[in-house]
Image (cartoon, rainbow, N blue to C red):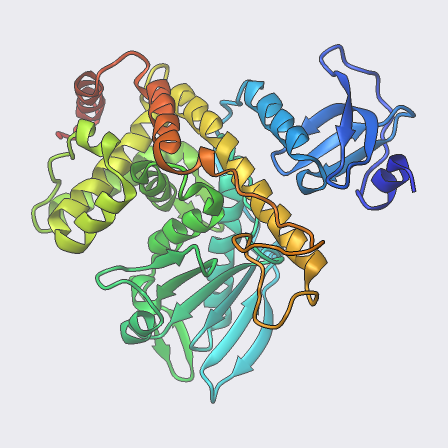
Length: 436
């Protein structure tokens, strides 16, 4: 079989005949098996590439099928493209068009499983139809939101076809399953699963099922869903961006299955008013930016475990910063933050490509290894066994990672010091009547 047949057969494609753009360059591409073909790159989304063959057929090729050199070329090509600054006004799903499938109802075992187009979520209690629909809308709308925001995020399940979630009847059950003490929800990247207790959403018992009560709110759920949608980013962004982005999406006005990005300021004001009136201590002093920007993930976790008041400062400052960069900075179009996220996406895409390549490798060798020797990419191979793909560790660990983070940070600072940036942030919020 020649590589052209390989492309047409194993690499699913859609035919299209279009004129060759002057910006497109013909080059030789190599599969991970060493086969080559000459084709023109049309576009790439970070995990697949659209290649035009010599006879005009365009095939969509998974990055995992290509050589490491081709994957690096695609990452660099995508990085050179100017990011879109388009910010959606309203994004979400149509409530009437969203189907929620009941996969399992085990009342004796306290296990109920529901499925939507992109999610499979498990509940310890039976959800009333209206509640199941609202939860499903939150799931699918958050998926659409992360796709629509100009952050270069392309949400894909880390494993399998569906994103996974678990909802717990009690805080005790949530903690027993691994939920962190003092937390209202969690996303565990090693399990690829988010967990939220009913209490955090305003869900209460009504006979043999559970319904929304007067406190129903999806902020915590959307926050954790954002982490799940950005799974491949979590270890490759500073913690303030990870948490600030999740707070930003979680605070957007959400009605009828749709996020109102154009009304983001209303969500901000509601958050500030809530803190002023109902939270002990009100609006805290923002965390010093020079310390926040240099804080490691380990330092962040240590502070969360030891000082709740400082944790509140961290989360608030992270949210206000992401909001500032998205709506107030520069011309108010989010340009610096969008370029920052676009630049940050390159290593995230490489990590995603690596994990998919590893999953493909595990599928190919499944059942060929001695019992008990599961392949995770970290073991050694003997004889003629196929070696697992290598993680590009130089990009994601140690000094190289810190250098990337600091270089990308300069896109946000854009010649400003942390003190100058903080003064601009304070001035912007003061115009809204918010004193920091």
